[in-house]
Length: 235
Image (tube, rainbow, N blue to C red; front, side, top):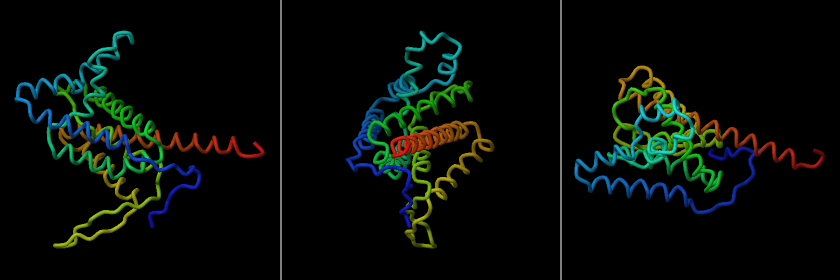
């Protein structure tokens, strides 16, 4: 169990997870910065760093030359701001469970591009889907979901360890990653269409990030396979 590395993928060199560690530290530091501010300055930080859906959606009605401003950059800065330690912890747990293997496979630049681009595009999709939202969107949920989606695309037959509640005890078990991620994806899909509006914001962010992540991974795998075939003798 757990040996499902695809055969069409070259073996990656192991290296310290510099990007996963760095992203974690940035999120933690900014959380403590936020926690140390007064309520007024906390709101100011959210307003400045958070993604304003109406402003981002409005960019698509303007020429490209006018995009270089705070609304455009906020799709990135919003990824690193969390106002709840539970929200932060939940994102970081998933980042570490899935991000370590993704960084090992894609490399430091690969996972950095995945995290930033996946999170930014997820925020853009939410802004276009729900432009009427009055409050800024913050948090790394979209970016982390992109990492989770990439993990599934890169390691579709991997198993991951989980602690399952059995009465008064927790039993450790290894389950297919597809089962755990698929269950999470299905739950998000249900909440997207059946949950309240405030829940729909988070679910749309998760779903968009997940779809972008798995698309990125599948495209990367296809490119790697093409390069292997192009470089093999007789081609």
